[in-house]
Image (tube, rainbow, N blue to C red):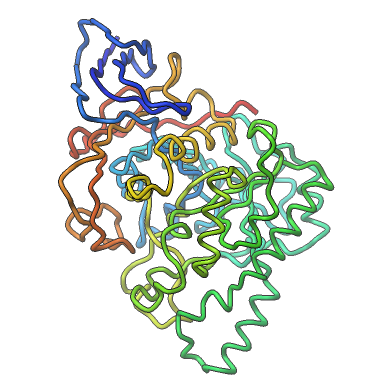
Length: 445
């Protein structure tokens, strides 16, 4: 039996922050009490530190298999651990796309051998794989992912009859990328008429417009209401979309939920001048007005989850002209500290951050015994110093395989000091041990 005792920390959990000790036995939180005396195998003095549940990032792209020149499960899960992210849900647009049970299970096998963090993978939907979708085990797969805007390979689901069949046929959570393909194509044609092949990146939110997002999200939500499907709308990026969601229902009872990504809270279209393709995401970073309305929806609980859509590309790929440069960027190492920086500025409370990044993903996906600091739950924890010496994101401290971050040069005065995963201290004072302790997430579906 392994025991780990954390003394004198401030636990942030379920809307409150309180001083407490915490005893871990093997991989489970055994006791949470003001003062615990125990002859533990290891004792951590957390004086001056805050103890958070580990972040659960419900949307990442770790690029394995098939795109491992950009990143892999090993490299990106290690970066996650450095950022206090203890669990991730990875998307199916790898190569080959995870649209059969065989390919999906191959990804799980890779993660079982190589992941530093806890993991789950979504099953991908296409216009012609309903039979494979229906084989998905809701106990050990996070959900079904549908791209209603273009993506890698054959993953655009644009057949309305098929879409309705998928929504009607599964009780699993359906997560959607919502951008209307036809609207984007029309906008791109207009941009090419205006600029030729040399479109400025600042035009990205005009091509992948607010209207394209709203049209697609609205359609998906109406279909979910019609069919009774559980729908989760990824990366809300517009003011107009926020009006589609409700905040007068407890999360456990919501059938239609939503997520915002850190970059849509942090950047606006004014940043394209300086950052260029390095903040080119789909959906696009849009106006300051959109950003502020998204913040309002996050704080009043119309938006349920904060995630990253972590999607690394090489520097060479991102340095191409707008039309050639791929969309996406790496964020999983810096998501928690970015949100804590907003807390320091009075934009959001640390309790609300824990709700949106730890509690709500666990509740929404019905993840078994994670996402909370509770006795009997898995000991997935991040120990954070909220008042450290200033430090900056730089190439020297970035762990992403791609070697860059859209936050390079940003100074922080918070840092993740240590990370505990399944009761094991996997990062101690910034140093990650090479044990890969990640477990497959299980779901109470």
